[in-house]
Length: 438
Image 1: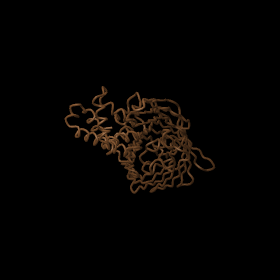
Image 2 (image 1 turned 45 degrees about the horizontal axis):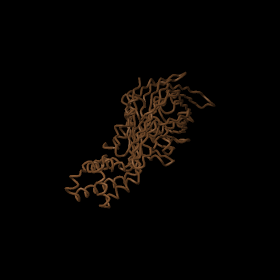
Image 3 (image 1 turned 90 degrees about the vertical axis):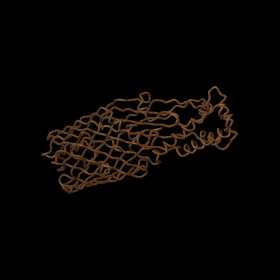
Image 4 (image 1 turned 135 degrees about the vertical axis):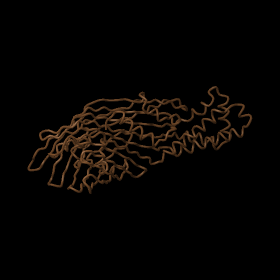
C-alpha cells in the first residue's frame, strides 16, 4: 500500500490493456466519439465504425479510402475519497505501528516503561484513525484501446479489429474489531502495558499483537480482448439506405483477484499470475444503421451477444483471532449490451445521442450500470473540429461526466483526436487517437 493509489489503479488498468495490445465506460475507445459524451452508434465515421457499430463500416462515401486507427486509447478514474493521499497516510501509520511493536524489548520496556507505553498508544491511535477513515472506501479505473483497419467497398466492406477494455477496483474491508482493539490500547494504559508485555515475553514476539489485526484490502481487475473481422453491407429498404454489420470475434478474458491483509497490501502484486485466471471463447457484435433523410441517422448495436461468466481464483485468508479461514472470490460477467443512437448532421455540425437499452454488468460484487450520452461536434475549419458532451449512468453507480476534445486533420489524411473528461466525485480521464487514411 506504499504506492500512490490513484496512480497505481490507472496504471494497472492501462498497463493491462497495453500489455495485450488491443483496445471507460464503453467496451471501446474512440477519441472523437468519447469526446461527444461517449456516443457514436449513429454518429461515428466509417473508419471507426468497426469499433462501435459495425454497420457504419458500410457508410463510406465513394471517395473514402482505407483507414487505419493505430491506436485509440482512453483511461478514466474515480477517486471520490482522495485515497491518493490517505493510502500514503495509512502506510505511514502501519509502518510506525509495526516499528513500535517490533522494537518492543524487555530492556526497552524496563528502562522507560511510561515512554514505551505512550509511544505504543500513540501509534495505535494513529492507525485506528486511519482505519476508521478508510473503512469501505474504493477507487475505480477503466481503460480501453483499439486498433482497426477499415476497407470500404461497394459490395462488402471489411475491417480487421482488435480492441480491449480493462476494469479495475480497489476496496478496503476494515474489521471493526481491529479498531476496537487499537482503541483499547490507545485508551487504557493497563491494556497497552499488558499487550506490550505479552509481545516481549512471547516466543512469537510482535505476532501476538499483529495477529489481532485482520482487515483486508482487495484489488480486482478484468481485461477483455477482442480479435475480430467486421463485415457490413448497405441495402435499400423502402427508399431508405439501411446498413447491416456483424463482427464475429475471438474473445480472451483475464481476471485478477488480489485480496490480502490490508497491512500487507502491495499494488505491485496485482499482476502476479497466482491471482489470475483466464478464459477464451467466441462472441459476436451486430449493428444496424439507417439514414432517415439527408441529415438524420439512427443506429442500433448489440455487443457481446453471448453471455459468459468468469470466476476469479479463490483467495484464502486466515483470521488471526479466530483461526478460521475465509474464502474471497468474485465473478466477472460479460453480457449483451444493446444501445440505440441518433444523430443530426450537416457540413458544419453533428449532434448525437445514445442510450443503453440494457444494463452493463461487471463484477458481481458491483452494481450494474446503464448509460445515456449526448454530444456535439462543430467543424469551423476543414482541418479542425471541436467537441463536447455529457454522459450519465441512469442506474447511479458510475459517475456522470462532462466530456470535450479537439480533432486535427491536416490534408485530410492524418487525423489526431484528443479528448478529456471530468465528473463528480473526483472523476477524470483522457484519451487520444491517431488514424491515417490512404
